[in-house]
Length: 73
Image (cartoon, rainbow, N blue to C red; front, side, top):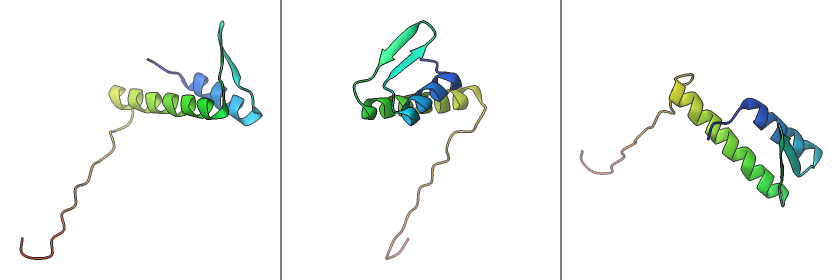
């Protein structure tokens, strides 16, 4: 699903004020707990970063493989 920065901002503002009800346009969502709201924020952040990588706005994270040995090699 495509997320927007506006959705992330609304979720973060709701968390900062302690609200559990969030409105996006004509839709309203009420989260059962603050933990559920935090999980929604993480989901949107992950989606935004994946969108940025897929569109080429940012490069994917680099991976490192380290090999250590005690004898030989």
